[in-house]
Length: 296
Image (tube, rainbow, N blue to C red):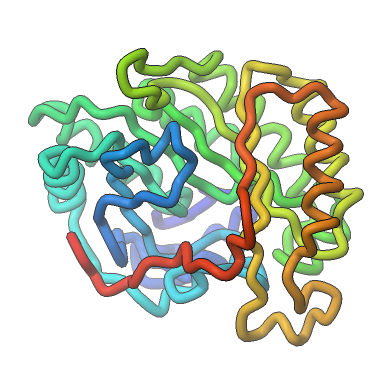
């Protein structure tokens, strides 16, 4: 924390003494919500809900972020490692299907310690690492043996797109390296026969952006050709233009039905069998929970 290089940005920020890097978070854990969440993929949320902890700050801060309230550090409460361990156990007591860590990259060392403590106190749930895909392999290796399910985004295949919307030109290469390490750690998907909930595996998400159908297709082809049925793909159409996106006119609209169907057609043509897609106009629905400090 005194020389932070946890993510690919390698800010070398002294977070221990309050000097902030790109994620805009000090060394102390800050989280905005810990509750059952029902809007993940069916194999993650199930009927009982995913025990989701939303951490404040983000190493990407995409211009179109739906969780911008926490991604930019505007919401959240400071907690200790001991309190985080307690939160994990409280979510287990509430019947959560798993522990779901959202935007956790900049807190990996603290999270590992909290998982150790919770494990010693009876935590038995699978752990989900829910991230934007902009990861360092060295940091992911700290999680080996602690994370059961990886749920990364694969946002961009073009450096130009990644630079424009996330100021991360190296995103494509970093995401490729990250997914490879994730698959190495947890292997092929495994499910509970009774509930259908995933116990081990990798689910890679892609949020289709308006006007970026070709790039989406390139991402799906790459992932399927590289990993086949060793991973699941989640193709999302829930993109919603929020405040600030008006400065990026090419994405200041919803994804059309035709665009989304074109992306799905690529998945079908590639032979994708393990995947999820969204039905209807999900952009009309709110997938953004209130970051009121619930459960923190």
